[in-house]
Amino acid sequence: MIFRAVEDADLIRQATRGNVESFNLLVSRWEKRVYNYLLRITANREDALDLTQDAFLKAYQNLRKLDDPSRFAPWLYRIAHNEAYSMFRKRRPESDVDEIEPEATETQITVGGSSIFPIELSLAVAGALDRLTVEQREAVVLKIYQGFKFEEMSEILSCPVSTIKSRLYTALELLKTELAPMKARGLS
Amino acid sequence: MSCSPFDLKEYFLRELPSPQRFQVEAHVKTCPPCREELERLQLTEAALFSLRDEEIPQRIAFVSDPIFEPSPLRRWFSGFWGSTARLGFASAAMLSASVLYFAATRPAPAPDRTAAPTMAAVSPSPKEIQQQIQQAVSKAVAQLEARQVETNRQLVADFERRSNEELRSIRWAIGQSDLDRKRAQVSKAMAMYVQPGESGEVK
Image (cartoon, rainbow over all chains, first blue to last red; front, top):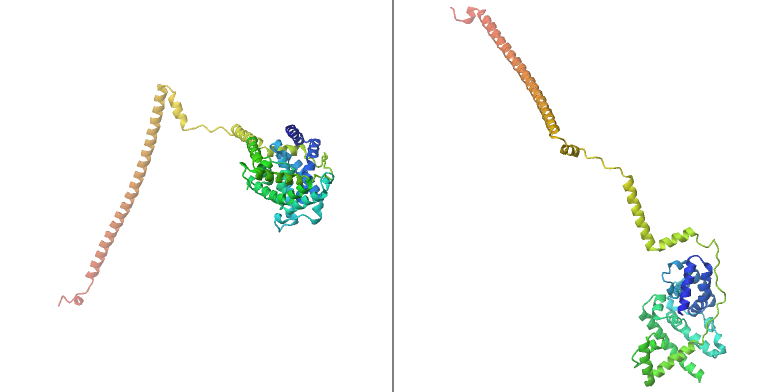
């Protein structure tokens, strides 16, 4: 992980000097993670792809503003988060972002785990995540799926660690009530 | 409610430092409710991981197109404005350059003419000083004499003017007394022509 961070920092330095290939290498390392993060919070593949492209374009344009290359990941996710919320506001400017619900057809967004886990469990997880608020879902995605620390999440979401914890713990309680018994049945 | 010495969720989310992690692990071994709570959280996490990451449908790549690439000048300019240190250094350099420019192009201040005699008076010999004093004295005397002559001239002019006026008034007064005298003679002569009967004195 340390070696990876050093290499990313080198690529960032080369990209800031105008080396596009270095940036492309950086993109290839992060595009899948950023795409899946955006997919989980938008629940729409097309939106997630468009937002991923926009996020990397903005990152390329503003790479020189990144003071500390070791903070590239939170910085990149912060851009992706802003892009996603900008899209939410454009689509429903009069409503609160909390109230935005994913499309009903997107409940079946992923069946990739069917070879190992039962498909019902994947659908149940997708449904349980959809029932969370956007903020709660984003907190779960950043912590459980993307593995960020609380401080990094605070930087990405631009809110205090206490707020992050509150959102995450509430979401975990809801998910635990819904998913733990199901998972226990699947294991038994 | 957990009886764990530290937050069980923070332990589960790998946010606790090692010493505290060990304490929670020791506690969980002896506390069935906390162990069950931790197992439920781990089951939830396992269920969440049933949702696998998807591959991105389309790879993202940027091309080095000179149309979209910022020019070297623009890149330098944006880099320049993005750096506070460079901006500060450039401002200081410009300020120094302007100070030097003004120092080089500004004309030298004019010599103080009032101070020159004082400066010159310090160095001359006593003979020169004596000469300068005599010159100054003779100049002052000449000025005084000129002023005196002018004053005298004005006084003489005033005196002549006043004398003329008095002379004119005296002449007028003499003329007036002659006239009165002649009038008296005429009156007297006219009185001698008056007839005696008319006067009533001789009968």
